[in-house]
Image 1 (cartoon, rainbow, N blue to C red):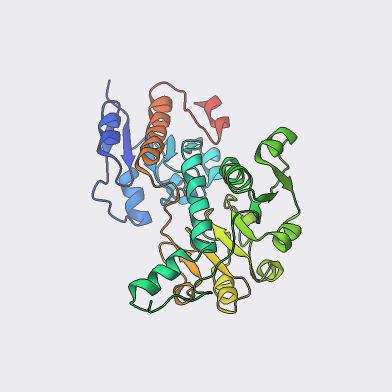
Image 2 (tube, rainbow, N blue to C red; image 1 turned 30 degrees about the horizontal axis):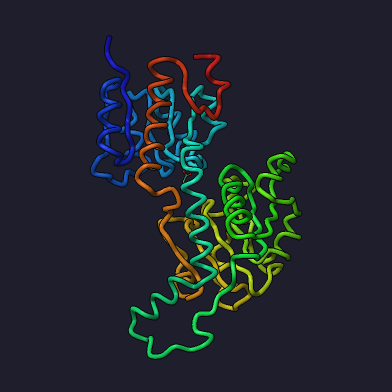
Length: 328
Ligand code: GLV
C-alpha cells in the first residue's frame, strides 16, 4: 500500500522529518523558503496532511483548492492561522501543540517582565554605546517586581504558570481577567483573584497578556485601555500580534503614558511598527517565547504525533475540531 503524502511547510528538526518519512511520503521545506499562498496551494496538491508552524494561513480558499487535504497539524499552541470553521465545514482536522510549551513560555513571559520592569535591554544598549561614564543614583531606575501587583489577562495554562511564578517566587499580588473564572482550587493554587478588565488595568503594576487571538480579542489593549493604566505600569505581550494596538502603544510609550512594555509578538510580524523601534522604553523580541530546543522538539513531536495518530491510526492526540472525526 502506498504511503499517505504530507507537506512539511517550514524547516523543522531533521529527526522529525526522518520520523515522518517512516510513515509518509514527505515533501519538506528544509531550506525554509517563504511560500506565497499560491505556492502553498501548489505544494499541497495531492497531500493528505500538512505540518504547519503557525505562519501558514489555512483558509477557505486553500481548502477549496486542496480537496485531498485531511489534516493540518500546527507546531504551535496558537492556531489563529487556521480558519477552524472552514476546516470543519470541509471535514479537515485541525490540531495544535498545547501543554508541551507551557512552562517554557511562562518562563519567558517572566523574563520579559523582568527585563521590561528593570530596563535591562535599554541599559545594555547604553553601555554598549560607550555612554557609561559614571554611576548615578537614579541611573536606569526601574520598578520592582517583588511585592508588586501582577495583572494577567488570559488565564489559561500559560497565564497560570506566570501567576504561580509571580505569587510563589516573587510574593506578588496576582489578579487576573479571563472569559471565565478559574475554579476556586486553581485560583488558590495560583494565589490569584479575579478582576474586571477595567479594575485590573487600573490597579496592576505589571500587566501580562496571554489571551488567544480571535476577532473578539483584537486590540484588547488600545488607547482607551492604556489610558486606564498607571503611568508607572508596564505591559508585556507574549500572546499574539493584534491583541495590542501597536500604534497606540508606541504613542503611549513615547508620551510616558505607561512606563515601559515588553513585546514578543507584533501586528503584521515579522514587520514591527516603525514607531516602536523609535522608543527606548520597550523590550522587543522576535516571537521566541517557546524557543528552547527541548520544547521546540516536543512541539514538533506533538505535531508529528497528530499526523501519524490521525492518518495512520485514525486517532489524533490534540484535535481542535474533533467533530470531523465522526465522519472520517
Ligand atoms: C507560539 O506562539 C505558539 O502559539 O505556539
